[in-house]
Image (cartoon, rainbow, N blue to C red; front, side):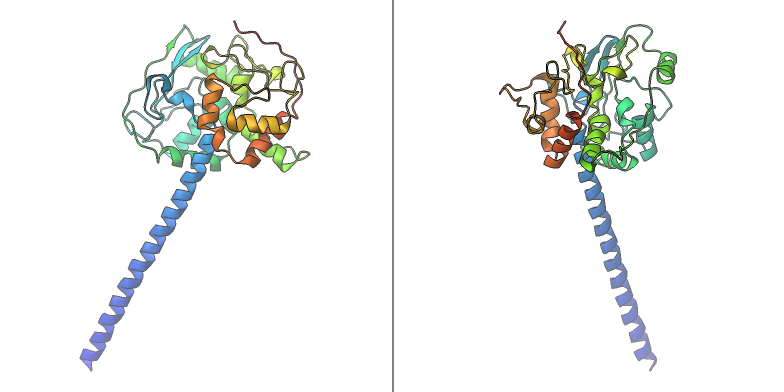
Length: 304
């Protein structure tokens, strides 16, 4: 009798052990699925930003997102930083809150102010959910041990006090707000253009303090990144893209091909190749829907 009871107890224990192992494997599988799904979403967000090309020194065959790219501006030369998950030279030690603070407040984990060449001035409009996904993707790429290069700026622009002043006086921290009078497609396009793709950072002229001239939003700048001219992307018939159809805009964002058959060059070609090319057709159409609805602004641009 005792032997039978003991045998049954052993059998129950064995079944319980198998159940626990099965349950843990199911949890692990579920977590892996959720984690992979978050990474895939983050990869899509990454492409919507244009591929973060400033963080890869493509001219010198630099490692993916390991920094080192020189960015010439009227305030001096900035160098793209290492945003791979390397714990010593990249962002590998950053928590979710560290990442969100950097993207929305322009602050390092140590509390230092980032220069607005890092477009947190637009990224602060990205939802927390999308930022967490973006971080998951960045932490999934290979870590590269490469120290960041020091910026070479004209005085006094490298001072933390100057950056604090700039943030408090020049930066207009307006969140993204959906327009209930517009369609879902239009609002999606507005979110991509204003937040993820940060179009205004390149395609809007700046004042002498480096602030966005909001009254000329998206009307182009002859002093774009790396000295390139960033064209007027408002629907002005003469100086902008007013003669383009929505199909023209969507096709351009996917291929880099303009309606006249010419193809884009420079930074925009990189943004399309490493970013917008991977976007869904509906998101490209949403961007076109938004851009074509903007106030047409006359702004004649000439390269210096």
